[in-house]
Amino acid sequence: MTTCLPCQTTEPRGAVRASVIWLHGLGADGGDFVPVVPYLELPADAGVRFVFPNAPVRPVTVNGGMRMPAWYDILEMNIDRKIDQASLDVSAQQIGDLIEREIAAGVPSERIFLFGFSQGGAVAYHTALRYPKKLGGVAALSTYLATADRMAAEMDSVNADLPVLICHGSQDEVVPLQLGLRAREALQTLGLAPQWLDYPMGHEVCLPELQQLGAWLTLHLSEKE
Image (cartoon, rainbow, N blue to C red; front, top):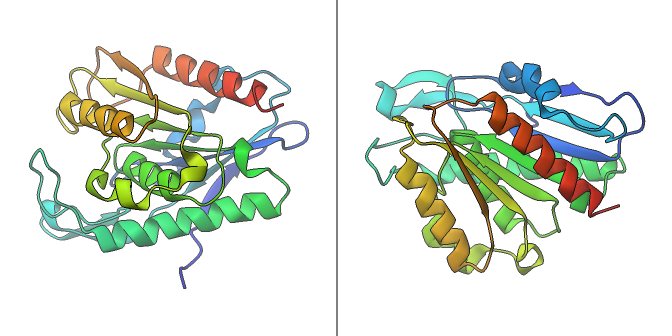
């Protein structure tokens, strides 16, 4: 049994018609992306609830065992990113529990989106691709697909046409651009058609990226009216 994650939540002015669960990166917390929501420039009637969960605090091997908010342990910081997959699986289950909470609150699963930055994006991928109910989509920001070797066997067919937006900085020295491109290739191999956007930035987000993210979310919400 997984433990419930503490979350920060922002509510729309009107009725809740959709939900975004937004996962932060290593060492950050749920409040990291709260301030950027207005920069998505969503329509006033979009009705989107944003849920910002906090990752558990755990030792991170590549940081000398220092304890910090982390969705999973990173064992080696090479290009192949050796990670502790057991802790990733637990985090994915916890995000799945949050999805179920949103469904129980009246939001249809196909109007629930997962956004994730860096390590949070890896969890978003791992959760959404394996989730047994149809989701609205995944926005993967400056991240990678940590479990590409498992997806052919574990991907749930209900999300075979899952909308995916991948955004990456061309100057990212933390999660190299190559890892984002590898994720795109792996998703294409699985039959998905991810949209790719890159920006002249490092391991961060920028205003044009957030505006494109908002436009992508608005488009896919309108398709599910």
